[in-house]
Image (cartoon, rainbow, N blue to C red; front, top):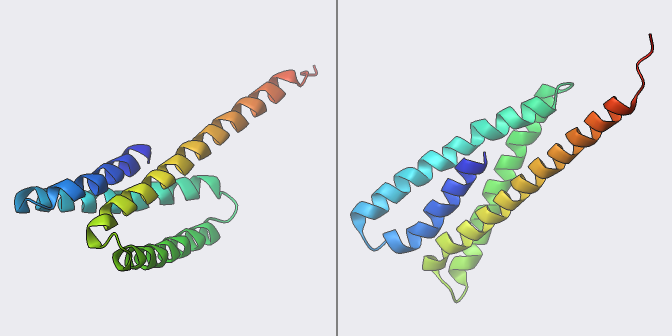
Length: 130
């Protein structure tokens, strides 16, 4: 998930440079599609692994969140286009939003690692009765 999200951010930032060349722009858009569609299976697997008790509810919430984020992204992109920065700033802004998402993913992984470490220490502290 980290690699795919980082790849998406790189493609978005690179698009500000590659849009000047048709060949590089097409290659960048291809990779953008690969990374964009690669995120969904990773997120679905992550959500399903966390929601052992209610997988259907978790999947529904995951898809709903993706639809909401798609709408919010289009709205924010429109605001960037209408701003003084214009259309050329959309890939930079999108890359920044993607980096924000990447930061949240790393933070989530760090919290999960910390939770597991604390749980492991608690398990070791419990005396085993014979």
